[in-house]
Image: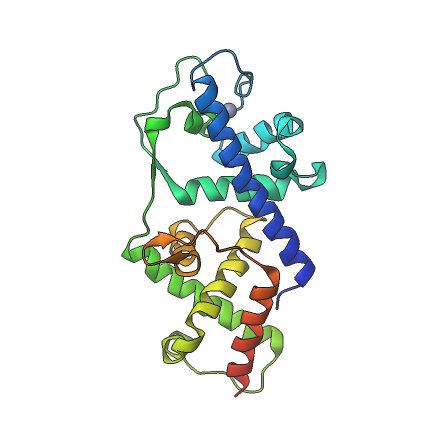
Length: 228
Ligand SMILES: [Zn+2]
C-alpha cells in the first residue's frame, strides 16, 4: 500500500524531471543544439548506458538547473532514474544520430540532434503490458492488505469492475512511478497507463495533475471493492 510521504516525494521529483526536460529543450533551442557557446554538453562520459550518462550529466550540472527542476543532492539517483525513464518511454531515438564532436554516450547523443527523436505512441503490445502491470499492482495490494479472500483471476476481475478502471490505472501508474525511481523503466506500458489517466478525447488534459491524495483515494476504493 502506498506510503503518502513516499508518494509525495516521488511525484515532486517526477514533476521536476519533466520541468528539466522543458528547460533543457528551450535552452538547446535558444543556443542552437550544436552551438559551442553553451557548456551543458561539453564533458565526455563513458559510453555505457543511457542512465549512467544521464546520472553523470545531472551530477555535474544540477546546480545550473532552475529551482523547479533541481533535485536535492541526495536525490540525484532517483531523479536520474525518473528523467531517463521519462525520456526513453516518451521518445523513440532513431539510429540516424551522429555525434562528431560531442560526448558519444547514449544520453548526450539523445540531445545532440532533435531530428533524432520522435514522440512515441503506445502500441497494442504496450497496452497489453499495461494490463499485466495492473494485475501485478492488485496482487501486491492483496498481499499487503492481507485480505481474507481475493478474486481467483485478477486479470478477469479488472474488466469486471469498469467503475474502478481509472482508479486502477492511476494507482498502477503511481506504483510504477515509485519503481521507476529505483530501477529502469517498464517502457511503453507506462506510456499506455499515462494516456489512460492524463488524456481526454485523444489529447493531453492540461488540467491533469498527479496528486498523492487522489492516488491514495483510488487505492482505498480498490481495496473496498476487493473486500466486498
Ligand atoms: Zn555523455
